[in-house]
Length: 350
Image (spheres, one colour):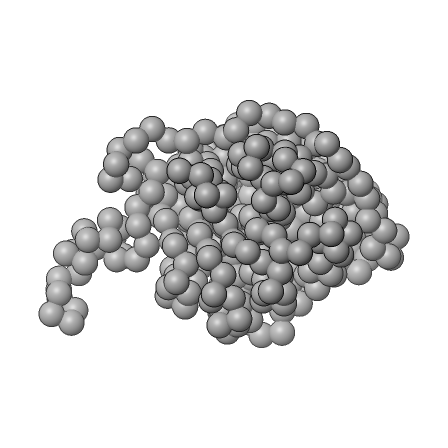
């Protein structure tokens, strides 16, 4: 098969991927070097809370070098919250590392609260945090839903972003949600899908996100907790190319699962309150000048590879690295290595 006079296989070989886009990272890097690990654990030198209205108290923390390059870690989910390991993608001697738990997530309170909890509220919170910390511009780091929120924030405030580092691209499109939560990933993880789908009565299985949202917003605590467990376990079971038992057990943590599942379904039934289905791709011109790096797992079944491919086609100025043996999680070896290297590069480290 040929295209434009060149064989597709030759093009793919020159790019190091099957599809002729991006470059192959992780185990597939041409230099064959050892994969990078996270930096050593660190503790915050400052923690605080933002009163953002509607009863929400948003937690944030600062780690690393007070005078270093500012970076804000934008977690996934939505509803996932930050963890201690999230601090460790960055050289603490070079970066001023800021973590924020989004409304209803992590250490922010009240937990799992959906009141005035939308994409646009979160964008305002991030901007309020920047102003509160007296930071002129900062780097954005986000994966999965964190990539969505990073892109939306950058589109709204392009003059406040120095660089972007992202993983597991998610564009908040109905085709992505249909693939993962309805039919697509179900063909690859039918064992996990049985438990997830069978929790919902047969007559409602044609719309699983809506059916779960109905239960996760029930007045009955037992109904909410059962739905949260099944929803969260489904996503945790499919986030690694090689399923991670400890990750799957997150579904057994009722507080984490409640925030994760309730907030996710709240955002998904509303398609993130984005004004158009292609809001992000339609507005890339506003951020095209921002140095950007993103990685995506070839076997990511949570956020399908097509999302990263579509972004790379619309935003060719960005550096796109394919992790050829990885799924969705930033904790997979290839993703971790590529993200650490990208952050080192943006800090001027060789």
